[in-house]
Image (cartoon, helix red, strand yellow):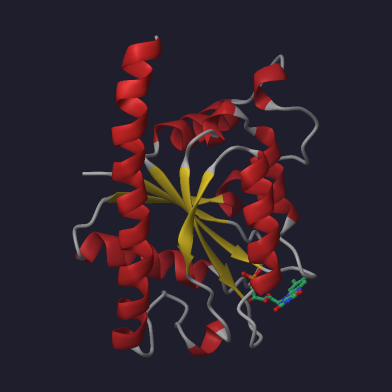
Length: 193
Ligand SMILES: Cc1cc2nc3c(=O)[nH]c(=O)nc-3n(C[C@H](O)[C@H](O)[C@H](O)COP(=O)(O)O)c2cc1C
């Protein structure tokens, strides 16, 4: 079974996008699609970036543990709010902080907003940033507009059927990319190294 990490990016008090992270984990677990874990950036409270992990002399245990989780994940889902047409600093902080860990990593993006556009500008920004990091962004996306009308605080969808249909397509495409990635990379690594 694939191992999927869900990064919940908002560290804001009273955040709403975390509802989507909770919903996704629940969906993956109930449907037995993968092993999944929420990596909640609010729990980490990382300091503002001052150097990449590989160049830090004394990284904290939390930092190395975070990097290890990303490295060992077969695929990642990033749930991010849109802040001023972009991604929150908390997310850019951890993207910049790692390097090799993002290479060839299948990443699916779910953007969230309280407004009507579902974080469409954050989506473009994040895709560009991840492309620079040589991650593989999954073509399927899952933007959530008017998030407070979609989920309650525990991540339960008010319209289960619609959310399940949308999430099915999104998660399955990530899992397809995870399988494709394994098939491409493993023989390549065996041949080269
Ligand atoms: C600093 C800040 C900037 C924001 N900018 C935008 C924005 O550009 N577009 C948008 O649709 N929503 C914007 N929002 C509203 C978010 O969509 C809303 O807070 C949503 O709940 C997701 O963020 P959260 O998980 O931190 O709650 C902004 C919110 C904050 C706190």
